[in-house]
Length: 163
Image 1 (cartoon, rainbow, N blue to C red):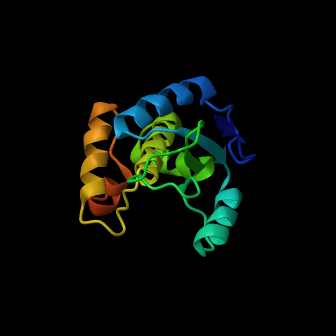
Image 2: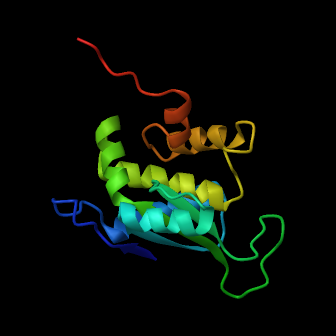
């Protein structure tokens, strides 16, 4: 399920369709190879900051947070009837700033963040691996027809034109 709690700072009506994002989420989840349901919260910077502080000890807003289901282990099969992969939380305010900075739509930025979060739910972690998540994200970005990935933006930042 996708819950959109639009921040008051977004003055225009949200171009995000819960049904369209759900369809993308299901396609991306299948492409990642992640089984189980994923719940997504689209909220504001304050909510992401609070979650980041509570669960990661970092007192700052962030773009996407991933919360694997309790006791989930990609190596172990699930024994529940209703398999849950985990939850994602995305800041629409940060996503809007990033979309503007990288020259694409808010919809595309949210999709990039969804893909990134799904890869984390699948057990990948760019902070500890040796490039596996970056390679997989780039491959899936092309497959899902998305603009550049989060990891690519950090390793190869966009150059601003000088006049």
